[in-house]
Length: 382
Picture 1: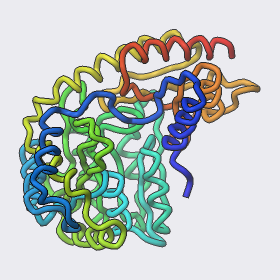
Picture 2 (picture 1 turned 45 degrees about the vertical axis):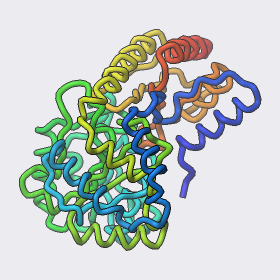
Picture 3 (picture 1 turned 180 degrees about the vertical axis):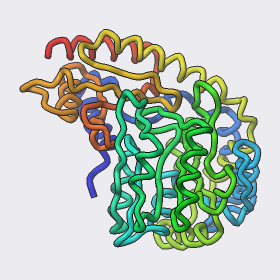
Picture 4 (picture 1 turned 90 degrees about the vertical axis):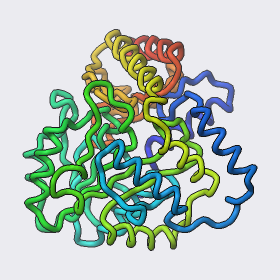
């Protein structure tokens, strides 16, 4: 397996900061806001009760899974029973559970690009083959549905994607999801893993779940969690729901890897999924303002091009116009910006988007303005 590009850059950033360097970190997808007060109070209450210190059930506490099932119905029009829900140590583990459960040697997994860096490596771990379907900036980083359909073969076992997308911020519309579902329904053995961890961070229109479309309930595993929308990345809780046979298989995988997720964090999860989604509307407004701030700042960067993403908290500009003898690719550019400008970004190639860098704007306005000015100055030297 390759090391995660995002975690690798985050580690370099920590090392430079420890050495006294002034680094603005735009590498990790980690909200800088504080968690909502109700989440913190739920943690305090759970600790005070003293009932949640023992091994939890592998699949998660029954009342937490029931609350998640209710959230899926309320927010996504997805009908799951608590027995169709599995709580994991982060959405990353939920995806890994599912990939291991569904794919193996000789299988193919179709992944639209750009994609989250871990997808391809998780697929390779199982012995299956990741089949990457590329897209362009002109396509708003969304491969046409016909291109995805053309990548499906008799060996294709899984279609794996995120919407809103990390790293591009692209959001699939209701019509695009309907077209994608029609493709899936033509292939009886094909399952879908839909990563919806950024569902609450959509700037225009609304989020749609492919599993809610006619005929798709038995074909889709929906992934979500509390890290992004509730600024609880360190609590490490994700969850998944889908057909009972898949959840049973994923539960078996999880039971051999980690067992149940943290008990106190599960009580926090229950509070989060039961909360009115309107309570986190301010977080979405923060990210919209920051997106526009970054897009404005990128206009001053020579040779860089960027679209307007509709969700998540990333931009994925094309940067190859500034390559030269010193900077030959995205990794060179990321290292140049880290060392010359004191700004950490991530090469887009591990995301399936060579010639780009991913910028996370999950940090404060002042830092973002300073980072854009530093980037523009550094790139101007090239």
